[in-house]
Length: 252
Image 1 (spheres, one colour):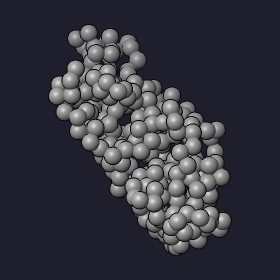
Image 2 (cartoon, rainbow, N blue to C red):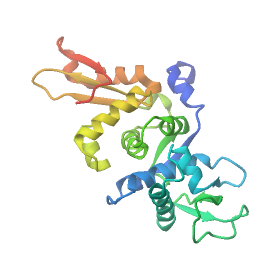
Image 3 (cartoon, helix red, strand yellow):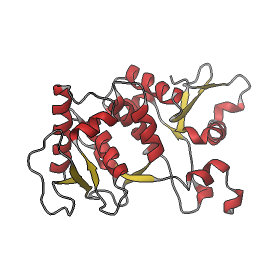
Image 4 (cartoon, helix red, strand yellow):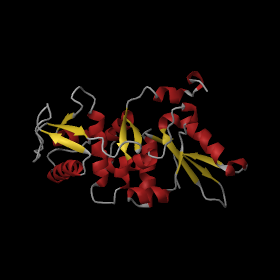
């Protein structure tokens, strides 16, 4: 299949900017603040698009992007601890100067730092995360953006990319239970936030509903809505039955 024969959404996606997110962080032993670490690393990597190859930002700036008031002392402390944790795990290095010669030791909320991703644990084991999706999530009206992002990442980390674009699959089939286990969130929360991501056109989800058989949920980037529907039909044997229902934006 030549490029001109590819679906429009795949051709358009090839023009999008993306980051390589190390999957290993998603599979780290669960600890308090992991979801915040994941969102911060994605934000930092998306900012690294300049000649210095570093994100010029501050604790306060990261909070503002997340829609959090920098005057919130508890949130400020959590943000600071998250950035320090990412450096301790060797995902980033924090510098005080633009030439990146002086590594920061103590972080001040209002001070601007130059943060460089290390690329550690990335090669051959990364998820493709598009910057437009990161922006959509950070712009959402929610106090739980870190949890929304970890659910998003858990889903897109299963997407399959290939040099031959015609061999790619843009839909993921995953149970709510498996996503809950990966994100360490309860089933009800996972379902709630998947629906929220669908409503905000970050993810597209569709459920095949058939009596006497377990429902199947298919997910993917909202851009590929039509392809996800097609893959759901092709990959669900139950759809050969006339009484099957396809429910968009519903997960069960």
